[in-house]
Amino acid sequence: MTRVRWMLTWPLVVCVLLGDGCAPFSRRPGPPALESAAIIEHRTDFAAGKNPWAIALADLNRDGALDLVVVNQTAKSGSVLLGNGDGTFASKTDFVPGRGPVAIALADLNGDGLLDLAVANIENTISILLGSGDGTFDKRADFPTRDEPWALALADLNGDALPDLVVANDRAGTVSVLLGKGDGTFRPKKDFLSGPTPRNLALADLNRDGILDLAVVNVGAATVSVLLGQGDGTFGLKGDVGTGRTPVALALADVNHDGALDLMTANIGTDTVSVLLGNGDGSFSQKMDLPTGDDPRALALGDLNCDSRLDLVVANTGANTISILLGNGDGTFRPKTDLVTGTAPHAVALADLNGDARIDVLVGNWWSDSVSVFLNTAPTHTVTTSGSE
Image (cartoon, rainbow, N blue to C red):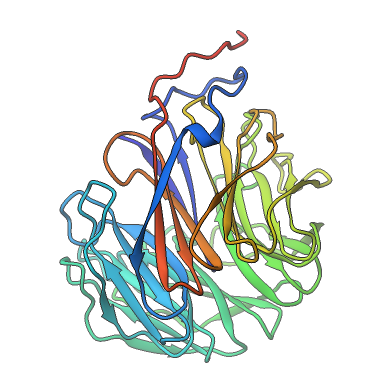
């Protein structure tokens, strides 16, 4: 069974897949085994609502197959496509979130063992929809916010085993923390300063103290703000690191096998991905930029070619492609290979959709109102030449 670490953020689901279906990770992996063109099959498209903005994957109806949740910004709707377990999905069933949905996160918010849904709506609400366990959601409850919430994440921030909510507020230059009560409701928000125009965020332990920290992408400053967690639902003052121009998405993962999380951002102002290697104390090295396609809007990491290294997948909205950059295991990546998607791909997620222990690729396409699925055909046991410790 593949172990999956999820970080749920703005126009994408950052899905970092580690271990078991491919070869186990080594500390000093050898050369990449397969080219990206050899591991991804032709795409299959599934209809979503008007202008899908964000996507997420989870088993909503408890049948062992991953299901797909999409929020459609222009349609002011959400769609659920139940998975068949073979890489295909049933036709969509729609639900109604708040107005202008742009971000989604899934967790059991009321302790009944069923996945619930949180949706950020840019018309200043957070919608909570409690899951029924069959792929549908009960009538929603809306929580008023301010200043255009554009991103959100769910995690236990204060050690009470209840999911808490973190929201990035675009106009205010802040992030809000709402501690969960365990019944699907939240306590009043507490705000923390980020940079200007925060559009994406992720939670992870960046300084290896066992406490979740926060990284926030600031579109208006070409920076990522790092706020170290205190373990009680609060964060320290921000520290900023530079990225490429106009960063809109981020991911956190250990791409050089040193035990410290590294930072990647997608930068629409320079058509690049910035890679910043982590120092293990919440700080990062100077960025290294990698060329992508036009207008990269989303990115995700996973071991696509089963060589025990994390690879990058980037959705290029202006090029109607995804770029695959195979990882070398030392924090560097090989030149991109592009695959054609639907029109204006805006979100990307990685997961094993058909139970073959390979990581597949999903892409939400803004203008073609669809989600594209690319199934992975890489051998699950790749022989590589590795150095020994």
